[in-house]
Length: 233
Length: 81
Figure 1 (cartoon, rainbow over the protein chains, first blue to last red):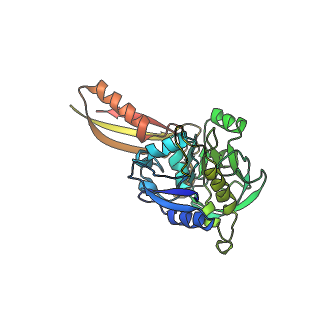
Figure 2: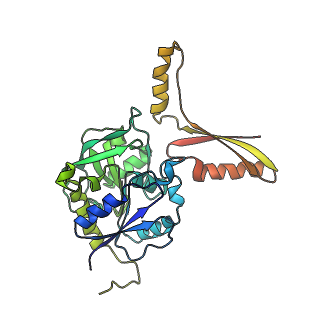
Figure 3: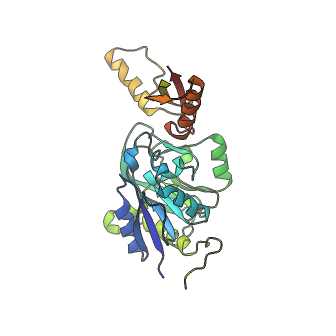
C-alpha cells in the first residue's frame, strides 16, 4: 500500500495542487482535505500548503488555526504523524501553537519572490531525515511574512534541541539566526518558508525540493501507529 | 450593557517594524525632519455586551489573548467606553 499524503485546503490556499503533483511524482498517493472537515481519514502524512488561508486576515494563519480540521491535525501531530507547513502553512502551524515563534514582515518591507540557497542544519526531522547536515538546496521563496522571530529562550531551546532544520545561506528576510525552517521537539511537525514542491523538477529550475519531500515520505512510511491501532495488511 | 471597545494591537518593543521604518524614512522628503519612533499597528473597534465594565474588560482581554494579537510579537492596549 503506497503512502498517502493529505494536503489541507483552506479558503485562499494556492499551492495545494503543486504539492499533490510533487508528492505523486515521487510515487506516493495524495489527496486534498477541505479545512471544514473534522476528520482526516486514513492518511500517513499531512501538508499545510502555501497561499493566503482565510485571506491572511488579521494575521497570516490567525483565522486558519480555528478551522474545523485543525483539531484533527493537532491530534495527528500528537500521535507522531508527520506534518509539514510550507510558507503560509508554516504561519498556520506557529499560530496554532504546533511550532514555536512567529513569522513577521520581512526586513526591508519587501515581498520576496526568488530562489535561495538553504542549508540542512538538522536531520532530526520528518523533512530532513534522509538528507545530510550541510547539504545545500536551491529552493524558491515567495513571501511577505517570512521573518522568523521568537524569544531568546525559545531560540536557545531550538538550538540546544537541534530543532533548527534549515538555514538560509544568505538571509533574505531578516529571520533570526537565518532560520528557514524549524521542527517540534519530536521532529514530526516541521515548518519552512521555502517551497520544496516548486522545486520538484529540473524544468522548474531546481529539483532540490525532492530531497526534502523524499525525506518526508520516508518519515510517513515509518510513522508510529496510534496506540491500539492495527496497520491494515 | 453594551460597551464600545477600542483595541490597539502593536508590535512589542524590540520587534523590528519595517513598515514603521519605511514611513519614517519617507517623511523627511516631505519636510518632516523631526519625526522619530514610528510604529505601525492595528486599531480594532467593536462593541461588547456585558453586565458591567469589569466583565467587559475580562472578555476583551481574553479575546485579545486568543485571537486579536500574537503574543510572540504583539501587545494590546484596550480602551473601553
